[in-house]
Image (cartoon, rainbow, N blue to C red; front, side, top):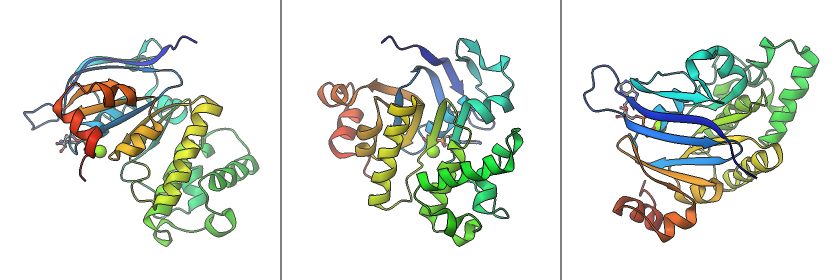
Length: 250
Ligand SMILES: Nc1ncnc2c1ncn2[C@@H]1O[C@H](COP(=O)(O)OP(=O)(O)O)[C@@H](O)[C@H]1O
Ligand SMILES: [Mg+2]
């Protein structure tokens, strides 16, 4: 099967106002339909910024982004955010005054689906992230542990059954067992439901488990992007070599 580019970034730079160093520095990257691409790199290397550019939460200072062959600016950005991308925020971002059900439902309820359909979907999603609907539907975020909140953030991103999932360190606060279970579910989303996934992590073993390709980022650039075998066998830079041998050390 020949892979098509779902997303193409060309010569992207991002300089935040008031900063002289670019957060992203002339970066080009293609994301193929149906692949899982993992971004890994030191803190501050620009991973979150890259994800935000895709979702239209930030705009590049220069360069272009194409989605399905069309410039990102030709889309209705809200529509893109609601239905094409599912986004898991690094800082979770649940609404504190809303219950678990309302948080997961937030985009779903904007669609024309019946309340009954939405409730059923929310329960399916809670099962998926391994929180019992009976116990969790009506709880508020401050009645959940950090890991449980993170899982609700994942469920919310999956609610619209979007084609492309953008996941920013979604499992950082989870215990090892739950983390492993949810990693398996991510693999299932890709293999069974053909989702395209862009996944940020700090953890090299998570990157190896989940990534068809792994992009190693450093100072706003991609140092190397390849399969885990190539990263291991032919690391292009000392940073990549150290990363695959010992991780990021954080
Ligand atoms: N809104 C912003 N305004 C100014 N600087 C920012 C903003 N967001 C991120 N940065 C800076 O850009 C750099 C990269 O941040 P980020 O994309 O969050 O990196 P990462 O996710 O790899 O840790 C950091 O130095 C950060 O301080
Ligand atoms: Mg980040």
